[in-house]
Amino acid sequence: MEDRYLRQFKKGSLEMILLSLMAQGETYGYEIITRLNEHGGGVMGMAREGTIYPILYRLEENGLIRCRVAPAPANGGSRKYYSLTDLGEKTLLELAEFWESYSRCVEEFLQPVRQRRKEEEL
Image (cartoon, rainbow, N blue to C red; front, side):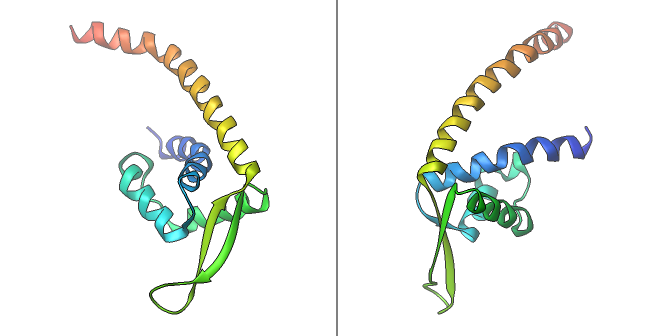
């Protein structure tokens, strides 16, 4: 399969995944990237700063997340912490509801393909 199709498909769900991670509690960029790579790296591909930070900035510009800067515990620098706004929580719930409907719809279309493949294997 062409890589561009996979990239576009993954890109569409990444914002919802980032909102889901922030719904679990305040987090920072490196932690987000680490969690994505630990739990979704095999399917989503390895998350990189150049992909994640532009999405975080866009989510913040759209009022879905907020950012606060606090001292970093390890090196004396600062760290940006991200969390959901009320609008972000509402949007995540709407996206999750849509995702459930969308995935049911896609599964209905895929069922005949799976059935045909199963019959061919017999």
